Length: 127
Image 1 (spheres, helix red, strand yellow):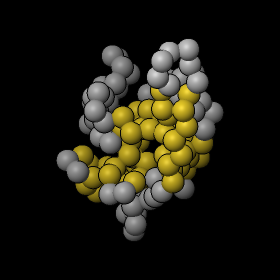
Image 2 (cartoon, one colour):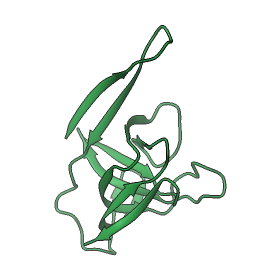
Image 3 (cartoon, helix red, strand yellow):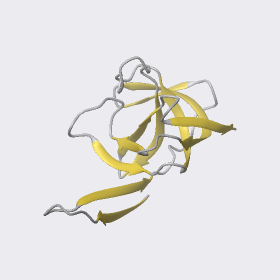
Image 4 (spheres, helix red, strand yellow):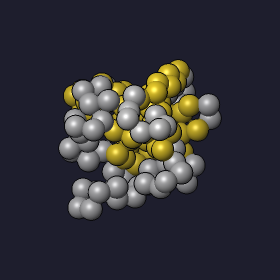
């Protein structure tokens, strides 16, 4: 896993830091369609590639829920991300857009997830 922190220039007294993460896959990955546990969540295995479509990019979180303390990075708009599966029962990040999250992999023993709403990330391929 590599994380590259970069400071964002702004007119405010303190710049906001953005971290882009590149997680490593869970090895060995179960066969497509089978499930495995990551913490308290069940992940349905299915390696695929998604494109981040949200104009603001996507936040990477340590759990498939939105909380102020679990944002661990971000992915810019247009980025291609390989995901290892999906969590069907995560938290609803945006009202009416579902509870599905992509499981991206592990970074330093911590799971990494991206919200899977259609206006955030869309599949571009499968394995």
